[in-house]
Image (tube, rainbow, N blue to C red; front, side):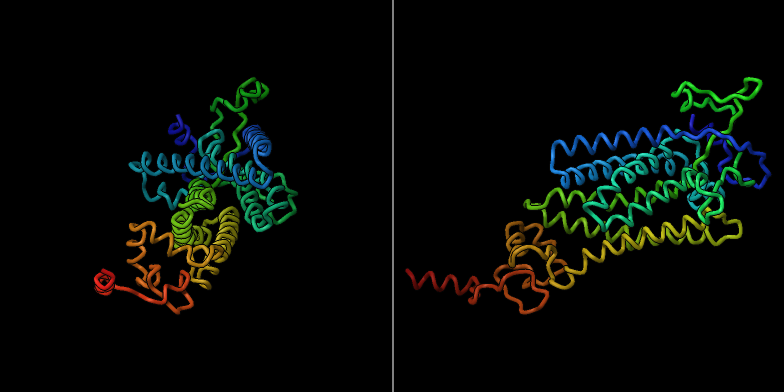
Length: 368
């Protein structure tokens, strides 16, 4: 089971010297398999929708899949393992822990790593604003899986954490299921399976970041799917709320733990790399949030591109939402029967004459 495997791989980092062989199993086929799947998804979507729209459909699919599987992993990690948590195995300690390949964590990381690789050409062609974001994600997921060891050794980014003395000993008795998939089984001269596995490094770090990012991303895609429908306005508000909450509250808290772990005395090169990459990804998300909030602050409209009066008309047609909006905005801001000269006005000017209930009854009597 995963629990027994985890125990054998010594989740907490040990300071014992490890004699490592330079040859160890690396499950390339997992990432390659997801690359094939995402490529097929892009081709199928392109055959059904125009190329730009097909990219959005595949992006929505990734967002949903990544959020669901990362949520499952986090629930399992925090809830089921919660009874065994102590000072060395808690969430803080697990930010940069090791994990075996072929586990759920590895599949969560690999499916997103593959998606960003496949989607990068489309980002370059149609969505340049996402190029930096995709590049940081690719570099980060590659670091977690140990692909940086294939860089030239003289480069500042070279890192082979499998050669560190503090890296746990991979279990040689593991059955190498991912190699059996390829009909291969690493053995030594005596025919004994002793080749160590390529561990993953990142623990809660990589998966939690993905979950946190997709939590806001889910509402972004919902809003995009509901464009030009009656539910566009509330979906836009929900997206901005969730995106602001995750980027301005959850993410900074998460970054605090990363910075703390990267500045401790036993911090490794991976800790510092993780801190830099996460900060860069955080800044790209803040930039995206700013681009969405700045027009609202300037115009006073939740959807600045809509025609004048759209917001008030929509609220008049949805009384429950109007009452909720009334908790935060003055009545003249949200009602079609009121006029406000403020630059933050959300609607067209109101009718020049405001008739209250008393005047209305008086006019009816005169007509009679």
